Image (cartoon, rainbow, N blue to C red):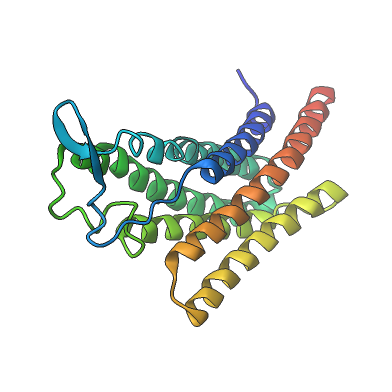
Length: 234
């Protein structure tokens, strides 16, 4: 049976990989600017029907795959952090795990709707009532839920930070997690005050969290591997 520390090691590695893939695919994916009602993106014929350009679909949705897989991987990672937390820190790690579950539930539902509802509807030309749900709407439900999800991830990282005390690696992880929360909340407040642009916040918080997860994932893999070796000696 796989141990908690070994699971933590692999979940830390996978979290870093998924976060890196998310950023990489996001950077190379084109940004589409579509006018209201944000569903008039048909520009070619596929299968005899006037539908969304074959260049738009599935390419505009590829970035959702690593982002979707990041959610369960992150939950497993935070669960492993909770497992390895000292008894007096488990309250904080449990709260962090709860917020990680909220993030995962919001994000996986948000992305799954894009695959199973929005994308097929666009391809079929069934666009009535779709404006609020499409990812092309900068004021839509998709963007709002995505911003909420990654804000919940930042809160999860804040509470998980309380677990890490002691050595240099632990302190580095703690400050990475705290910094992620501060920057995420600061960007939300700052963008809201300057100009209410949820898309800018969404992009900003994703870049902050993914960068932190890439670095902290590498550090956590070392910590879990070290803990596994100590357990083996005992």
